[in-house]
Each structure stands twice: as structure tokens, then as C-alpha cells.
Amino acid sequence: MPEATENKGVLRRFLDAPPDSVGKTIFVAVTLCLVASMVVSAAAVALRPVQEANQLNDKRVNILQVAGVYNPEVPVAEAFAAFEPHVLDLATAEYSDQFDIDTFDALAASGDASVMRVLEDDPAGLGGQMQAYRMVYLLRDETGALDKVILPIEGYGLWSTLYGFIALEENGNDIFGLQFYQHGETPGLGAEVDNPRWKALWNGKQLFSEDGALAITVAKAAPPAGAEHHIDALAGATLTTVGVDNLVRFWMGEAGYGAFLERLKAGEAG
Ligand SMILES: Cc1cc2nc3c(=O)[nH]c(=O)nc-3n(C[C@H](O)[C@H](O)[C@H](O)COP(=O)(O)O)c2cc1C
Image (cartoon, rainbow, N blue to C red; front, side, top):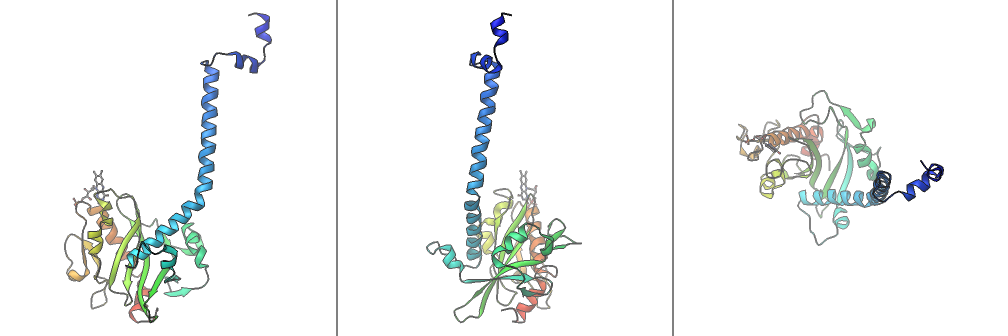
């Protein structure tokens, strides 16, 4: 090897190498990856507040829709101001003032132990634990009397956890509507939970039979309790249907909002 080449520094040899040398090809590839990953990370950080604001907005639109008061002409924040949010202690069925309404959702989503309860029986597939406190939304009529109550519900379908809201009339028994705002079920099958025709089936149904038993079911066949407690299964999506049945019955039952619904029925929770 000539002496001049031996004495060349690493940088000089790299610069002198042809553009398609292995060294230069790897250098370009690594540099590109680094630059691209920095751009993506910066975009993700910069866009996070926008994403969070969009998520909040979407959730509010869903609450307005399930309550039947959504109007695309009215700004969401303005329309949403009609709702009265409360953090509900599920065990006592009392509204709790130990949490900040504005930060409660983030605290609950973080799975903080102070707001969670371990579940021995987990029919809704919540991963063995549930929120012991839940954000609920009251809607009043022009006289100030309770009109509707919007309750968050969630549970496992076939592929995913479905997150949504159920809107009940002030008596805690009549369903006004049900709507999911997030899930990963298959379009055309389980995702038919979003079909307006299926969602319309919930309106006017009753949670409890006359003897006070939880009677609502989502199934192929009507239950003995009667059609007013029955929502037809999704065609070709029995497994998602079973998930919805389980989650609705769980949240409307004793471990969920049961005690709160009793208070509503007694006219005490408004
Ligand atoms: C690719 C694929 C995706 C499916 N997605 C769903 C779904 O989201 N929800 C569901 O209940 N069933 C889904 N199924 C069908 C279930 O495996 C099962 O056949 C169905 O729930 C039975 O419902 P049926 O008794 O009404 O026919 C899917 C099947 C396949 C092959």
C-alpha cells in the first residue's frame, strides 16, 4: 500500500471514497433515519396539545349526540356548557367533591390507585379493575328540573374495549340513547354498533322490569321480561353483541351505577 494512503485520516479517506461506497451509503441512511425520527418526534410533541383538545371535543360531541342535543351550527364548548358534570362515587352514589372536575378524567385514565377498585368478577372485561368514581353529566330542562343523565360505559367486545355513553331519562330507568365513541371492532360486523339504525333501537327501552330487576338485554331472542327490555343483536357479530350486553348489564348493575340509579328512581340525585 502506498505511504500516502496509509497516512490519510479516517475523515479524508471517507470523503475521498466514491459516493456509492459502503461507508457513504450507510452514513446517508443513518443520517436520514436520525433526521426523520427527530422530525417525527418534534411533530408528535408539538401536536399533542392539539390532539388532546380534539379528543376532548370529540368526547363532548358524543355526549351532546347521545343526549339528542347536538347541533353542528352551535360551537361545541357553548352547547356543552348546558351539562352539569359531577364526579360520582359509585359505592355511595353521592357526588364527590374530592376531585377537580377539570383534571379528573386524566387522573382516571392514568389508572391511579386512588380512583380504582379491584374487581373479583369482571363480566365487562375491564382487566380486573374499574374506576370507583366516574364523571357523570346531568342535563336540566328550562325549569332547572333534571331531564337526562349521561353515564360513561365501557367493556370488551371481540377485538377491543368499546368506550361510550348511555343517556337515561331522569327516572333512571328509561333509556334515551347509547353511543360508542371509541372501539376497534370490525367494520361491517362489530363496528355496526355505530349504525344509526341499531343505535335508534335503544331509545325508549327500559333497564328494569316492574319488580325492579335489571332486565335489559342485547341478544338475538327477546328475553322473557319483554320487548321493552330487549335490543336486537348485531347481525353477524354475536361476539361484539355479547360484549355490549355484558358491559351494559355490568354498568347498570350493582357493581356499576346500580346505587345511583336507585337514587335517580327515588328522585334524589338531581
Ligand atoms: C376477519 C373477521 C372479523 C370479524 N369481526 C367480528 C367483530 O368485530 N365482531 C363480531 O362479533 N364478530 C366478528 N367476526 C365474526 C365472529 O368470528 C363470529 O363468527 C360471529 O361473531 C358470529 O356471529 P353470528 O352468530 O351472528 O354469525 C369476525 C370474523 C372475521 C373472519
